[in-house]
Length: 159
Image 1: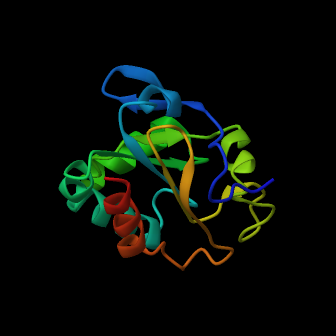
Image 2: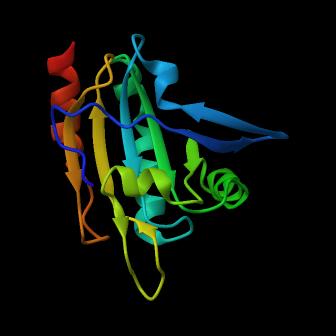
């Protein structure tokens, strides 16, 4: 199943590790409150994913100024995600879709990539305050980054 512009975004609750705590973060936590950019990335500790998450973290104020929360999801464990974030100063919440359910529900799951089964596709979704998808981009090519200018333009239009 893939998620398209105009669809209700599938809700999720995923684990995120920060310090001693293993927290549940849900898309629904932001409903009625903030727009959300949901980014799926293939694997922690890979060069393109590191560059993408560092770049988004470095420009986080652009999203905050637009009243937006950014969440990043991969199939890595929350423990690996936390170590990777610390090593690379990644400040956006990293959520573990270890069971691959959320990636699949968004149509953002490779059946096979580099010999691994069930890796998130590099994807981006803008979910408005009411939980409706306003931007959707799913790439079968893990080297192709989302169009972040188009994402920010969408967010500006949402006000």
